[in-house]
Amino acid sequence: MPVSGLAPYDDANIFARILRGEIPNRTVYEDEWVLAFHDINPQAPTHVLVIPKGKYVSFADFSTKASEAEIAGMIRAVGKVAQMLGLEEPGYRLLANLGEHGGQEVPHFHVHIFGGRPLGRMVMPA
Ligand code: 5GP
Image 1: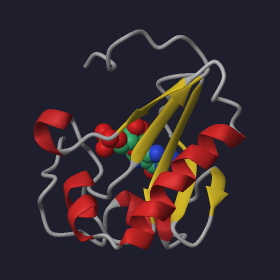
Image 2: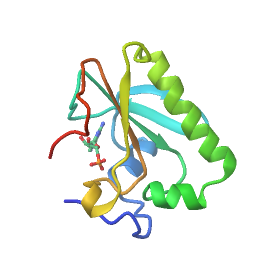
Image 3: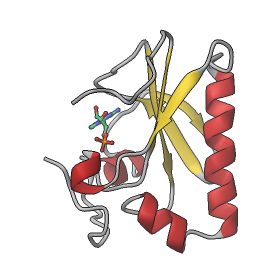
Image 4: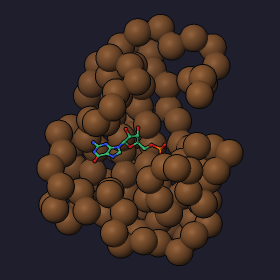
């Protein structure tokens, strides 16, 4: 079920539990700002999620409330993970779903990295 991108942060959400180590994940990269791990239900040969360690519900929440250092840390980490995965050539797609119309299901801000095959010109169909 899609969630609101403006709701209060829910400490019980699945990515909060992954960050606390309560649920296992296949980690690709971690630093002081982010955790990156394989999506449990991949939509492309490579499908990795990058999440900030801070408690942000959505891109709207993150982009307004995160510090400059957190924002820089997140953006640089997304680029670094894509580079580490060998996706820069032939390319990849970034996606951040927000709220009901965006189809956001987990209320902890995350960026999807898709790659490993031609992805077409537009976003994934529903
Ligand atoms: P959203 O629709 O919120 O942008 O995407 C949430 C993503 O999280 C989905 O692609 C879904 O497969 C993934 N996901 C949900 N639960 C888990 C989990 O427990 N572990 C991992 N690795 N991914 C999950």
